[in-house]
Image (cartoon, rainbow, N blue to C red; front, side, top):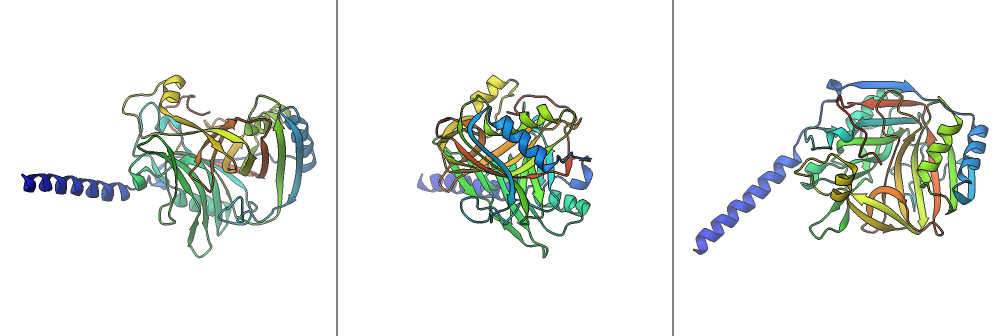
Length: 347
């Protein structure tokens, strides 16, 4: 009897180990075999951009400051980016999309973010890059679905510096943040990331405090730009810090075994948490879809504690304080746009 139990345990352990090995070696989509689109973005005059954003943000926040400044060293606390700056060939990237997750997951849509960024870097004629942004995490690494908070640098010599994270829902339905090793540069299903040479230079800084309106920080920026620069396609990317208060954020559970076809079903599957500041969020926003089926805004945040997830809005408006550093995209690349699409699951 004891031998039988031990044998069953041994077989079960062997299955788990073999499954983990298989999952760890799941290959990524060949980037040369999926659609690649590229378009130019509109870069507004700096003074006009400052005035437009200042006016628009004051409709939603009590205190607002917008300026172009010398980029601080963002590799230091509290931002902890993989490179010191966000300047040099600023580029917006989107790969995959929500239709690869919903209504049911397409597990073959696994991308190598480094491979994507190398291809874009060659097109932009740059030898090194910093990429930051939001997407689905590398589920083969953990054996479960997860959120990706991407913060990755490739040096000119080919070495990778990763300060990326994943957020997952554990067996107790708690949020867990884990680091992604530099050896794994995969991202599943979808992503919205900002690529640059990671250099210091003049950068857009936005500081807002005490939210008085209904929009979240990113939505107010995006709608302000879209309402003023009509029929102009603008893209921003980078990082913002929620200095104080809390933010309503979600983390995906493991892949649903039943189809998710509505926002209501989606929100029942996602796990929502009020996460405490300080939170550093990375991602992108664009003012229109540009006939490319783009996601208009997407930011994921992380903290030094166990928190990480998809940013929705702050839940303590009187305590909300944001400090953001954004690059203004010159070009946008759309990689592997879904042939069959839908519009839910993009909040």
